[in-house]
Amino acid sequence: MTNAGKTGLSKNGKFLVTAAAALSAGFLAPMNHVKTGTANADTDVKANQNVYTVKAGDTLTKIARETGVDLETLAQQVQDENVIMVNQKLTLVQKEATVVDGTKIADLKYNANADANGDKFMSVSEYNNWVNNGRPEAATPASNAATTEASSTNNNVAVDGTNIADLQYNANADANGDGFMSADEYNNWVNNGRPEVAVPASNAATTEATATNNNVVVDGTNVADLQYNANADTDGDGFMSVDVFNNWVNNGRPEAAAPTSDAATTEATATNNNVAVDGTNIADLQYNANADTDGDGFMSVDEYNNWVNNGRPEAAAPTSDAATTEATATNNNEAVDGTNIADLQ
Image (cartoon, rainbow, N blue to C red; front, side, top):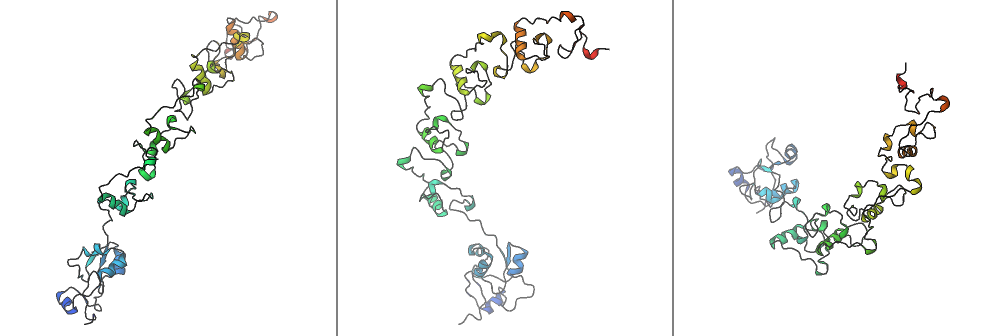
């Protein structure tokens, strides 16, 4: 018997029932007698991408091929997987692919324990095998057990469970002293018991704290918080390095003695805390004619310090003009009787 008179449909495309039997049961419409308006793949899929309407001549295999939905998803929607009916609606949204433990494949993350061949790529097959085997932990190679570097290939964590992205530089773990701590160096350091790096004996008192040793100086102060201190500026260059500060602290924070030849006239500047000898901030000093010893209308910090150290004496008005001395911007903006120049009538 030929297949010419058979129009029954199965999921694998085989004709299983006679046309007469199918028609009498109301299952099928003859291939050449589909009623006008019956939906087909072209129109129905465009109208609703998630629904397909069966047309004469369809098989589940054909529908699967045209829509990209797997046969299993289509077969689960029919009462008898060997027969489908014209105008029957089939949902085209297939179940999202999962692995053996129900995890969606799209949600899988690399796990070094499941990477059986160690190629840094975990296939679905490798993951399923790993789950079915009880999720065993991969043994670290004996030759490198203590130095395994945690990276994106093994869950992005170091040997102590710290996320690689959260690691902070630690000078004790910087084995090669290059100012950079690799995950491998960190893991070695942890596995060795987190030992502290000994300060070289030749430089124990002057070790400069930098980004390579926790950013602190010998007294625990953050380098970023250090303020210039003239006492610590031993070379008097107006700049205090971290090394100079550490020396000063280790020597007991001595006060720098003013030079003997200029002890009374030391000028307070940005190199010694920005204050004059009486503690006044340089920025707050006001011109005082009494301190303007050279009478040039400008009071230097040096002149101010000399004047303070000499007991703040008042400048004597010139004998030839003592009664008519003109108060100007060079002597506190006051007239000889104390009236402000701006208030004179």
